Every structure is written in structure tokens, then in C-alpha cells.
Length: 377
Ligand SMILES: [Zn+2]
Image 1 (cartoon, rainbow, N blue to C red):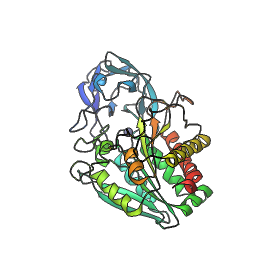
Image 2: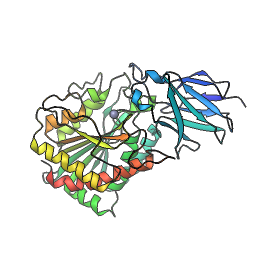
Image 3: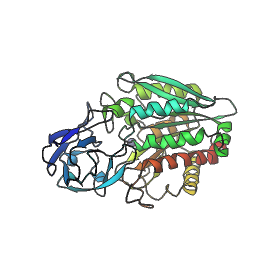
Image 4: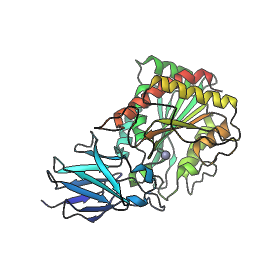
């Protein structure tokens, strides 16, 4: 049976250089359109059942985050539902995957993919629930909808909580997180969710970058813009996703904004705050510390020891979402980072950091929000 490799599907990304001999497959990762970023890969291989495949991604050494490769295991699946991990080696700039597939076709990806078709299913399911409205905030450059789920209605006696994910489209763990968060939030039998919904209106954008997601990008939108460097200069031309989002936020106001991401290098879940924003104050610190402490208490998958260095006061880059939101609105603004690799505190050899664990962390954030909702500014 001849070998066949393709990325011609939603969120696919690979360039095939050699694919005749299963023991000598040579590939490159395609750059995000209009940019130099690349690291997300997603492709399928057919015709190597029971053979010892050696797949070399030859341009891995030029990818955006070199620290992402050491200790990394690739994701693989036979049914596109269960994504197990496969060992890799990173040497001389080449990422090598060795695997003997048990079936004819196997899919490989940087992390368990979350396609735009799955996104449609997510919002279709959510809009069935009482009290949920689905609004299109605007269109992307490729003409896709920027979907926002409103859970409850803003009111003077309620807080406004905004939650976003996948500004960086290759960080698919962020939308798996959204599945768990939304499912829990909309569970009428869940007392924490019901109470949170009494105290706050929630506005949720499960995918901030539909174009990058469908195109199989790591980090940018259709024209190569990194959305998380656009917040102080969002425009319809370069970053309509952020532009439309900010217009919607200005209508309701915002007391808490959580922006969900994935980190290539660090094998931990952590939160980065807006400490370096000029307007960040002791109340901002108290809210940030409160949220992190609450979430760590609720979920052992979350920790506060490892994370990014904290910006010195007044030095934050305001083009980044969390810094901009903290500065502009004085709200509790946070970036939640999950690993591509695994949580080193609770490692899982077979699955690593997985969709199911993302969902559970998403669900746990309902409790953290409830713990903090009366303490927001
Ligand atoms: Zn990110």
C-alpha cells in the first residue's frame, strides 16, 4: 500500500518533502500566512500500518519556541477523539517522531486539535440552554463569525465577566478548556454555576481567532497579525477580532477578564496578571492573588510557583490583552496558561496534558469566579 500524507482539512498544517519510505519521512511545518511564526502541525498518514515509521520535521529548529521541543511528546489519534502521546527526539534542529501505527490511518498534531467544525458544535449546543444568547461581534478577515455567548444579561446589581480563548489559534487547549467551562456554567443542577449566574453576566468568546484556527496557524490571524500584540492599536484592517471585542466590552463594562492560552515550554498551569500596567494598584493585586489562591485550592492541576516573570510597575507592554484590560478598565485581568507538554506536578505518561484535563480546569474556574465575584472592584 503506498504511503499518503496530507494536511488538506480544517486546521491541517504540514509540507511533505519526502513520503515514499515509511522509515524516511521528511516534513516541514508551514509558516503562518504573512508571518514568520510556525510550530503548529496537524496531518494524517495512511499506509504505514504495523511499520516502524520515522517522521522527521526538519524545520523544527526554526520554529517559534525552541524550548517547546525538549521533553515534548507528539499527539496521535486513530479516531480523532482519543489523542495519545508518542515520544519524540529533538536533535540538530530536527524533531523526530518514531511510531508504528496499529491502523491504516493515524493523525498527528502538536496538541489535540479543536477544529472550526467543533467550534460550531460547541456554540450550537450552548445556545440551547436557558438564558444564553449567541451574538456575532463582527467578522474576521476571511469572513468568519466572531461568536460571543452571553450567559445572563448585564444589570447594575451584577458583575460583568468576560472570558476569551485562542487569540493564538495553535493553542487548542484553550478551546478544550472552554468546553469544560461552558458545560459547567450552563449546568442547571450545579449550585456554584447557578449562584455565579445570579451574581454575574458572563460573556464568552470561545475562539478569538477563527481564521488562524481553520488555516492551521500557530499564532496569527489571516494576514499574519499576532492578536495579542494589538490591544492598544486594534484596527479593522489588521485585527478586527480585537477591534470588535473591545467595542462589545465597552457596551457592558468589565469586572473580570480571563484570557485563556497555552505555553509551549513550561509544563505547568499558571496565571499571569497585569502587575506592570501603569494603573495597576493594591486592589488589583489583592484580586489577582485572591483568584490564583482560590483556583489553586480548587484544582491541584493549577499552581502559583512557576510562571512568567512579573513586569516591574509601569513597564507592561500595553499591546498585550491582560495588561491593556487591567490598565484601561481597572478590572481583574488575567492570562491563564496551560501546557502543551504535561503538568509536571501530576504527569500522565499516556496522554500528557489532555483535552479532558483542560475541560476539568475550565470547570474549576467556575468555582474560582464564584469565590471572587463579591470581591471584584
Ligand atoms: Zn498564547
